[in-house]
Image (cartoon, rainbow, N blue to C red; front, side, top):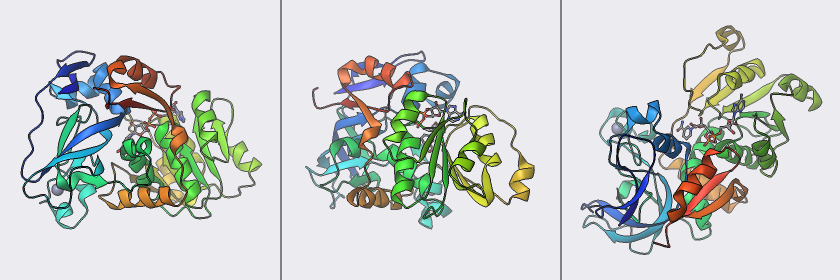
Amino acid sequence: MKALVKAESAPGLVLQDVPEPEVGINDVLVRVTATGICGTDLHIRAWDDWARGAVRTPLTVGHEFVGEVVEVGANVNDFAPGDRVSGEGHLVCGRCRNCMAGRRHLCAATETIGVTRDGAFAELISLPMTNLWRHADDVPDDVAAIFDPLGNAVHSALKFRVLGEDVLITGAGPIGQMAAAVVRHAGARHVVITDVNPDRLAQSVAMGVTRAVDVRNESLADVQRELGMAEGFDVALEMSGQPSAMHDIIANMSHGGSIALLGIPTEDFPIDWTTVVFNMLTLRGIYGREMYETWYAMTVMLQSGLDISPVITHRFSHRDFEEAFDTAADGRAGKVLLDWTDT
Ligand code: NAD
Ligand code: ZN
């Protein structure tokens, strides 16, 4: 079968023939129809420091996908050929304290498809049945393809109560934009998003934000005054990984406010801990999705009117992956999809 592979320890990816994956007795084989390109895939293609440390070649990359079940192992009785599914990309051990307590997103022995084992940018992927989510019929294919990053947005956005609250989101990338639509759907009063990229700020207006703020020219203190906010943001979602965004958040929170941290910083940086302490802020790291409460929440919010489709700005054949990756990397696009039905 065809797969997009990091073949050797050097920048780039190749579309090449690889053996079809094995299907164990507890596994499900999925024919991939569409995939989404994530920042992780861009890091692996660029072969930066993080990628060199995390990936062993050869590796089939990718983790955001939707597809159709084509074969099930002998122990599998609740999936059948024809089911439309996506995969939870985190494979947990099932035996540690957190797994045994049902807190699978906190497993310390997590493996990641497309990073530590073969991924989804391929005609076929085989996954344990415990890692599959069957889509409701009314979820569009394009949206189903990006349930993985939508899950990052939903996990962060629903970590703290947002009903009636003022929410600050730093970083208007695809995940920040989806999180904006989610907190809006969940009943936030003001949703303010920040970025330093005018294209992304313009895209986030379509996601229903109250204000899209270019932090190079505007201060959040002024925006708070303009909106008639008296006490600061109640909830913040850090979705840029940038030190200055974290600084903006801590300087603009209400006393007792809560901060969900999804963005992955590339270096250590100072934090104004005095304000964190005196203003009694809560900081919470977020990784992946809750299995499978986040997946349930995504589905029912989409069924009750959440629309994240504007975040998808480009679609390419998997054969044009170079152009697709360049588009995703140049910072102006939202979510970029690859079509795998034309193999
Ligand atoms: P992205 O890189 O597309 O978006 C980040 C955005 O932050 C960009 O639009 C960038 O212009 C903006 N930005 C840069 N400097 C800024 C500043 N000073 N203030 C505000 N915004 C600024 O990334 P994405 O795909 O939307 O993902 C968001 C973040 O979440 C990334 O850091 C990514 O690595 C991380 N991530 C974490 C997890 C997890 O499980 N924890 C999963 C997926 C992604
Ligand atoms: Zn575990």
